[in-house]
Length: 86
Image (cartoon, rainbow, N blue to C red; front, side, top):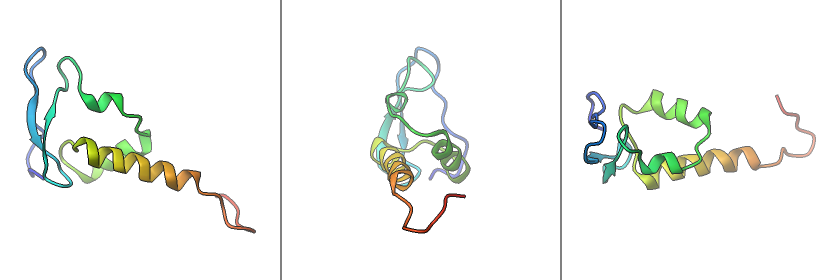
């Protein structure tokens, strides 16, 4: 994690190279210019809120995909017999 403010990319500019806030891997960020690969991923709004609260900057494709998948798997697990949803 950089610990500072997220890096900004100028509109129409080249992608910014960032370090993933989770694993530290370098990756290319195209936001807010022409768009970024992260816009292609389906990430629940609850996951995005949690990630924004926990990290100061972007995540790489692998870490963002893992966070989205983990949330989806949690939501798809059936309740144990006799349990009720709250």
